[in-house]
Length: 151
Image (tube, rainbow, N blue to C red; front, side):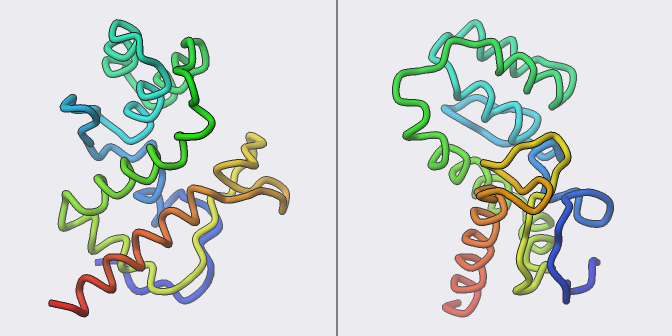
């Protein structure tokens, strides 16, 4: 088991790779099983069922991300993308007890999706960014802790 983190986690790699949307943990979105959160999120960008299926079958999360960049975005995407990501990340960390335990092993430290690919919406690059993914992970972790205390 992973020890409880005591310092901020600034990269979702190595010991903390399970925090990444690329981590091989299947999730279900709209009754369809996807191999990773990344696959499901990229598919959710479009209402085109053929494009969603192509993304679902992509051989890697990176390939799914590249396909997702080329789809016709569904109406209102910018207004719903954070809620969809929250749903998918919650699914990942509540469906599998090992993933729940892993997320809880991050303790109360700040989770920062540090990156070098200049994603300043979902993460932080060169000290700048909104870190929406890290914030969602911390929110879900807090929910899990609260649920555990009420049992």
